[in-house]
Each structure stands twice: as C-alpha cells, then as structure tokens.
Image (cartoon, rainbow, N blue to C red; front, side):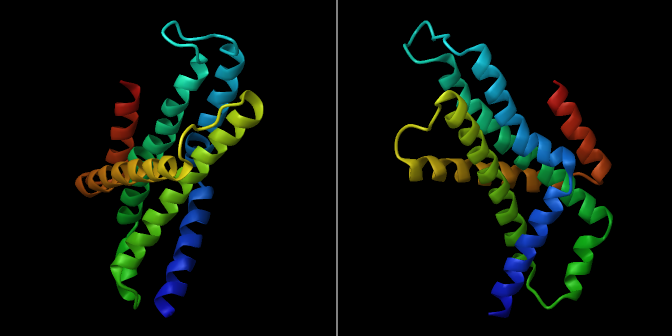
Length: 178
C-alpha cells in the first residue's frame, strides 16, 4: 500500500513538474490544437484530389504524431538528462522505494501528457471543425499509447547515451531543425 501511495504521489509530482516547463507545455499540449485550429480555417472546404474527405482529416494523424514525438523524443530526454546532471536521480537511491517505481511514475506522467495533448487536439478539432477519430475508440487510444511508449523508449535510450543535458538539448534542436 505504501508503494502505491508513493507511486501516485510521484506521478502527481511528475505532472506538476512537467506543467512548470512552459516550452514543454506549449509544444506538447498547445501546438497541435493551435495547428488544427489554424489549418482548419485555411483548409475548411479543400478536399483531397484522390478522395472526397477534407484535407484536414488527413492531417490529424500528423498532429497526433507531433504530440507523441515532442513528448517522447524532446521532452523526456532533456528532462532525464537534466535530472541526471543535477544529481536528482542519485538522490532517489536514498529513499526506500524501488527504482522501478520512479521509472514507472515518470513513464505514466509522460503517457498522461501524450493522452492529454491528443485529447486537446480532438477536442479543438471536433468542437470547431468536426474532426473526430473514426473507428473503434479503444483501439485508437491503444495505438496512441503504444506509439507513445515506443517513442518514450527511444527517448530514454537517448537520455542514457548523451553525456549531459546540454548535449540532449543540442541534439533535439539539431534534429528538429533538419
């Protein structure tokens, strides 16, 4: 019971720490809905030449992938590298909790941010432009979470390979600029 309470507190703290970073919040929670809103007004009646659906309907998966990629490949490696550089991860060894509790709380907080970002994307898209995911909603949600887990695994791998938070930031900046 102590482990579960500590785990839930850690998830809450991880989410609060995430929300304190304005760049992470902007790029993972606000950019995709803003793009959806803006492109929806630009492409309101435009249809794809190969299909009768609107062009906006074909762009929605790219916006969801943007949320997943930003959280998994930009936010997670930079944050983990910063924690390693500031010895926050080393301080966790002094607590009675197992290290997997910290990793699981971190992953759950990032998955929650991905889910919130994609939810906001469809909330704005559905309310303003009538864009909703088609098909089975649990399968769609599972696909989003599976994709987010894969990108988080890559982000954790990147965080384990880079020597400092500065290198992780430079790598993310360099890879996004190409």
